[in-house]
Length: 371
Ligand code: PMV
Image (cartoon, rainbow, N blue to C red; front, side):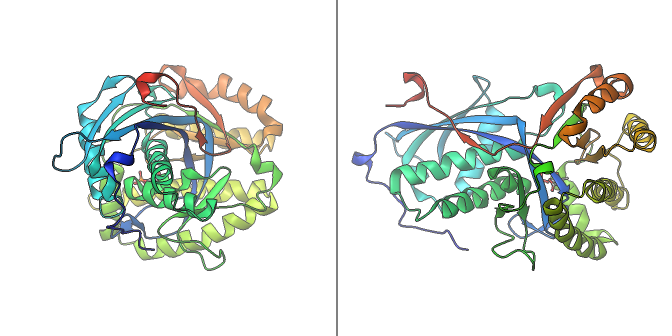
């Protein structure tokens, strides 16, 4: 896939100011992407559920640039306030896209972004944030050039751009479940963008719950970027990449069959494997906290006592995601309230579930530049 296109420029006199707005959700990996190479290419395939509640709303205002200048002209506002750090990072990202989107240099861009989940929650916003921005960009391309023959091309390009921003973000552009990485058994799968698990996601998984226990919100001691980098020297890397490939394949089958027990076994093993890879990196590091382990023990106890299929997973951090079918939601909520909130910072958790994917939102208000 080569999206490089030097001729994608606009005739300034023909561009009217406008705005595009997307809400895009976060996702939780069931089989983890951990290790990358080249330009954000994964060392192994991964598969995730797209969430419903944890999302980013992004508005992209554009107008023809009145004064020529170097690079991309962009300002970023987070929750209504100008954010210098994000402006710089977004500018760098957009400038890295200039071979694909040379027209970005001809425009003045203003981005307003906000998350639907609290800042202080310690939840990463890169997947939702980057997918929302990528969708705004692809919508802008569609508005200016109408290049897409079908929706599939549109989503694939959004996923490709999201990947360049933050690897796992590429899976957020689809509802339900998505696979990123080439899998022999999945036609159309690619390392360059994610594909949806369109047909066959078993009904049990279509409204699966994911409640996020906010164990700690302190800054991570090692960033995901550094963590991916450390996989290059990890002695278990080759075996891990082969395992993740087999597991993504199996997870796909499990999601189609609706086998919640096998789903859970794979899910928990993936979480612990991810953190074992961190512990076996050089230098080694730990992102889980004592309360993460205490909560895991309670979860195992709960399962032994109730036989109910509630399983956990972890991202690159200490917070636990509890995944379970809708049919046992009442028991799960009672268990969380009575036994797990004690392990959470400020006794907080976020209730979420599998969602339908990103949503184009109406642009409101003249200030946002819409016509
Ligand atoms: O997309 P990144 O670079 O933030 O890495 C995400 C890595 C994990 O969340 C740990 C796993 C995954 O597949 O999402």
